[in-house]
Amino acid sequence: MKPFLTFCALCCFFGIFRLPIEYYTFLRILVSIGALLVLYNTLSSKQHYFSIIFLVILILFNPIIPFYFYRKGIWIPIDIITGILFLLINFIERKEPKKEEEVPEEPSEHTMPIHQRTVSRDRIINPKKTKQE
Image 1 (tube, one colour):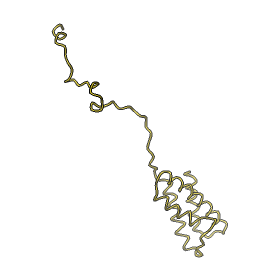
Image 2 (cartoon, one colour):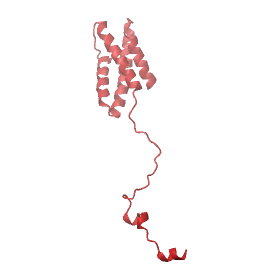
Image 3 (cartoon, helix red, strand yellow):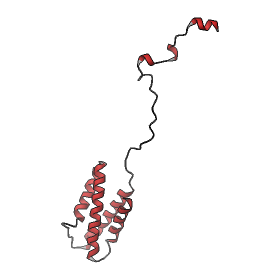
Image 4 (cartoon, helix red, strand yellow):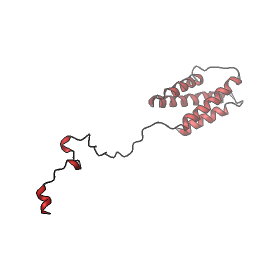
């Protein structure tokens, strides 16, 4: 997924140049797919702040009901911010619990039942055995 998000960011950065309308249609479709992927991943990992941001991106770049800002000067900052957000989400570390090899911990004295506790001061020494040795 990282190469795809990097490609989305690069395409957004290329969108600041004066290109044919077909490129911007392609950009809308590409960014919408990328925003949907990020939206799904952020919702599943419960990162709601990124979910809200990419929902707004999805709405702005959707190819079905497009928003037309008739000035190129309005789209340039939107494209740059969107590209930066794609790069940010691409290189941010996910907070996934690492599954390390589970080493069973030795039960402490307080968690063991009383009849299983063996503390050196509680041992009973048979006096007959010590005299014979």
